[in-house]
Image: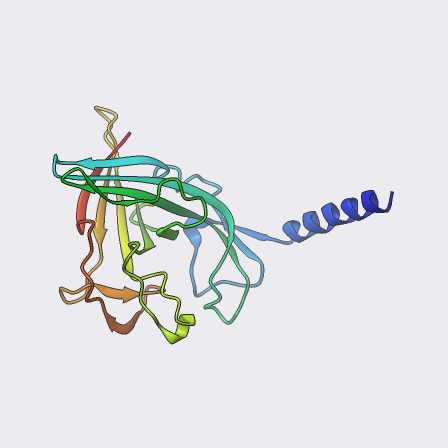
Length: 207
């Protein structure tokens, strides 16, 4: 009986915690107006257009990326340690060059090399995410020498109303012609010198 009461108390406590969320549409996210317990929720489905499987294949380079939407993820505490939450995009991918596998982390459930996508632009068709490749980690004291994020990825959704073959424009962001290490949309003074395997600019097709 005691265990049942404890379980009921836990459910009530969890519900009460979630009910305190200040729910705001994701597209209204702004670092200048956040407050305690803000939850930038994708109430209008602006992330849904990105979700799914996208492929680029020119006969030499085969690239497959699978985007998912994760709900109510905790924000990185860059804003005065204020806990906020948001819905975001995450993704794993597969890369083959000349039929040789370079990366394949599609089956991973814990590691998402592409993530933190919750800022949308240009009529909600463009989104920026943190992006890293498996062998391109770096060290930085600000992140306790654990370099998960290396650069920023820009994705632009391009609907095809005639053939129903939506496309996604993949652009890795550079700075003065070089790859920046970008942890929170702010350059931190380091330049990437490690070559990427995934091409910087691709046009992927929805499967």
